[in-house]
Image (cartoon, rainbow, N blue to C red; front, side, top):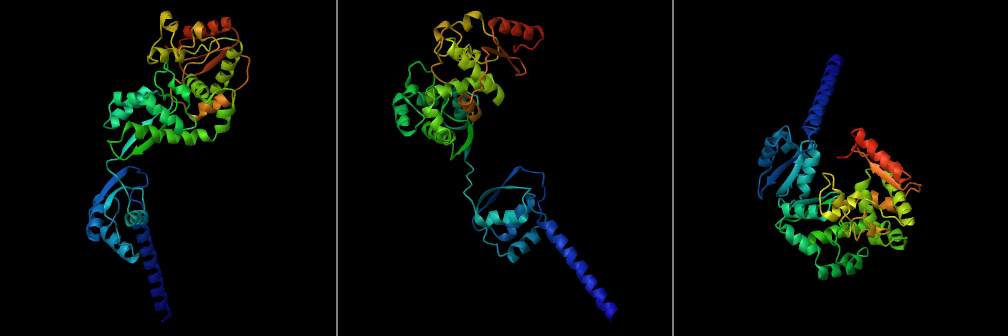
Length: 354
C-alpha cells in the first residue's frame, strides 16, 4: 500500500514538473534573438480564438489553444482593438499585457533623423523625403526673418545674431541632432522646427549658465562647436583643437579651419580645393586675411553635446597648428614650418586626406 502511494506521489510530481516545463516553454519568447517589429492588426469585435490564430500565424506564440487558456486563467481577455508592433522576443505575458492595455500606435507616423555634424541643407532634404514639404519650403521657413523673431522671443538660446543677413541658413547649429516622430507626412516645417528647438532647449539647459555668462556669446559658442564637430572625431581632439583656436585668437591670427572654407563655398568635403578657392572671401572662410581674430558669421553644421562641451572646457596647450590624416588622427605643431613639414610628411606617406 505504501509502495503504491509512493508511486502515485512520484507520478504526480513528475506530471507537475512536466506541466510546469510545458507552461514555461509555451510562455517564453518564440525567438529571443529577434528584435524585428511584427505588425499585428486587431479589428473591433475580433474573438479571442481568432486573435490567438493571428498571433500563431505571425509566429509570436507557439500554441493558439494554450494562449486562449492562458488568457482565460489570468483573466486578461479584454484585448483592445488596435494596430500593434510586437516582437518575437517578447514573452506571452508581455504580449498579453500589451494587448490588454491597448495603445495609440499610428501607422502613419514619420520618423525624422537629424544627424550630428550635418548641415541644415541635409536636414531640409530629410524633411522633404519624409514629409509632404518641399526642400524649398523648409529653407524658406528657416530663413523667414519675421518667423525667426517669434522664435527668438520663445527660446533663450536664440538671439538677434541669427538675423544677420550674411548667414546662409539662420537656424544652422540650433537644431540638435536626434530622431523624432511626427504624427504623419502632413506635419508642417514650423512644427518640425519647433519640436527640434524644444529638444535643443533641453540639451543646452544643463550648460545654460556657462553658455550665457561665459567669455563668448552663445551664438559664438555654437559656431565654435560646429567647427570642432567637423575638425575632431573625439572629445580629446576637440578640446585640444579648441585650445589651439584660443591660442590663435589670442595672437591675432585667423582660425585657419578648412571646414569653414568648404561651408563658405557651399561645397561638400569630398575633394581638395584650389588655392583660389581657399583664398576666396566668404562670411565663413577663416583662412582669409579679413578673418584675422574673427569667428565665422555663424555655425557651419549642427554639433552634438560633446563638441559644445569641448568649447566650454578646452585643453590648454601651446600649439598654433593642427592637421588630421585620412584616418582622423590629429597632429599638433607650434610653428608654420613644423605644420608645413607635417603636411608634406602625410602626403609622402599616403596619409593625406585626399
